[in-house]
Amino acid sequence: MPSGPPPAPPDALRATAVALLNLSGLGLGYLLLRRWIPAAACLAATVVLLLVALPADADGVSGAALALYAVFLLLAAVHGWFAGLRTRLVWPGQRPVALVLGIALLAVPVGGALWYDSAQNEAVERALLARLDRADQQVSAAGRQDFATAKSGYRDALAVYRDLAVHHSGSRAAAQVPDRLKTYYTTVAAAYSHRDYCSAVEPLQFLRTVPDSMPKDQLGTLAHWPDDRLATSLYECGAGGLAEGGTGWVTQFGDLLSTFPDSSQAAKVVPAVDAAEKKAAKAVSGKAPCTAVTRLHTLNTQIIQLSNGTAAQADKLTAVAGRADRSGDSGEFECGVKQYKDGDFEQAQQTMQQFATDNPHHRNLARARKIAIGAEVAQTLPAAGKKLPTTASGGGIPVTVKNDSPDDITVLYTGPVTGSFTLKACGSCKAYSFASSLISGWEPCSDSGKNYPQRTISLPPGTTYFVHKPKNDSTATPGSDTAKLRYGYIYTECAYTTQSLGSSY
Image 1 (spheres, rainbow, N blue to C red):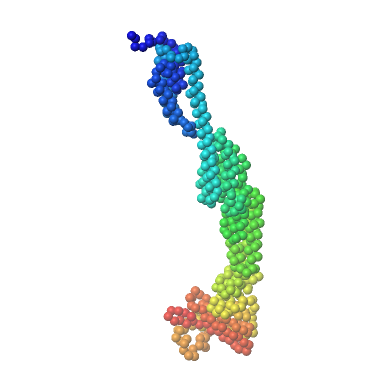
Image 2 (cartoon, one colour):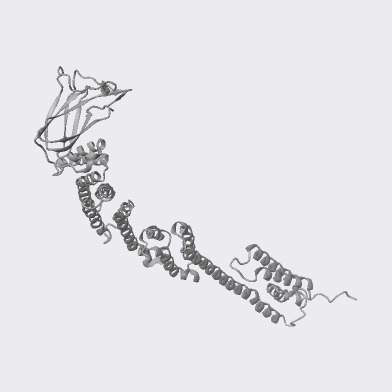
């Protein structure tokens, strides 16, 4: 007995039908040939592919897995073709029907591939939308932080928006980027909407760099959205700092004039600076003239710095700077008077001397010099500073001052009148020992054989305070005297020097 049915005559049509049925990935060609093990292998390969591929995600199936499966199907088709060449089919009996069935079943892998591609595209869309949502959350979280801390978060979110717009331009996520950018801009610039203009400057400057990385068609009008807001913030922040006497306003106004020179905000810079100078100049006559003088000199320096940093309105700024300098110099007189009245005689002396240097033709020059003398006297004799010196001069009481000292001396005096003069050194005089000055009956300027340098001045009655000090760089302590002058007397002052243990008096 034969072991099996005899082989069928070769039939290419039947072999083609088996090959096509195997390409379905279900092993149907092998089933019709009753080849159970190869059929099971085809079905198992398809199941494994489905387990790997499903559910569809944005990454899809690896290329290696797809290539391996495709090679497996081709081998199954080729093997099936040779197997079907001499083997009869179990069903259907008609070969054309099997062929049509094989062709029809090709729709299974083709349709599956198309379905999977669609599912994968949807997974990609969902993944892109998830990226967009995470970027939105990042912007929202950054909006609750100060800008310095949030800047990196804003940059990361912007990088996501750009990637979606440039590399996934046809996606649903990319279509939403323009609206997200509107939220992005308003979030970054939140300080401006809260009128916190100084805090708004840096975020708005950051937003002006966004067009460098984002496509223009994504930004639209947002490309220039920060400009006017930044100009306003620079002006308002600068004006506030100027009013408070700070230093940062120079930078803000400088950035405004250089970045937006033709803006309405830039046009307000000079009037604001001019108003600040006038306010400080007016304050010279108020309760704190020294503060006003310092403010004016500071303004002069700051305005010059501003005018040097920009060509816009430089001439006008220079004019305001010059006026601030002149007002400051002139105000030194009121400052010195205030210091004198407050008992700060050393500072009053320095201020009045500086005023005389800065204002050689000022109407208060003569009195400033008198006040400087009175302040110097008051540093040795504080009682001399009870009254502010005037420009009064002369009197009817002669007072002679002699110099019994080996040094040139300057004689300062203040009281009803104030003045100073210099006496040459006594060539034949020398410093007295401190011990000799304690001897009873000892008197300086009493040697009739010496020709003491002297000068006689006329003073009015009242108390006059004298200070004698060496004219050179001597460290000797100035001598002093308080004289109560009355008519009918002749007064003599004598300047001399005593030494004790290396000290001069």
